[in-house]
Amino acid sequence: MGPQAVYQDDNARPHRARVVNDFLQQSGVNRMEWSACSPDLNPIENLWDELDRKVRSNHPPPRDVQHLYQMLQAEWQALPQRIFTTLFNSMRTRCVECQNSQGGYTHY
Image (tube, rainbow, N blue to C red; front, side, top):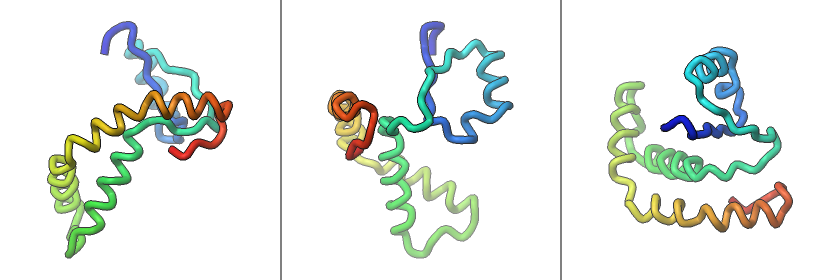
């Protein structure tokens, strides 16, 4: 990130904790103002969902945290590039849909 970068999060409690706020401020990170009721346009949420489904489909399930970590890494590496490309290419449509709904519900 450079000095012109702006950090955007979804206002989840862990992202807004005092320790996080202090760290970002001390690090000189600019944070985008984001309404708590705004739709989540971040495509990483779709990736987390895909990863979750892949890990849950494994049989047997992870034995412990270390095994879960290994499964997550393996499934992340196995995600096809087309998923990343499709999500990246969907950003314009996501933003237009959000604008057209005046910040309300979108199917994303």
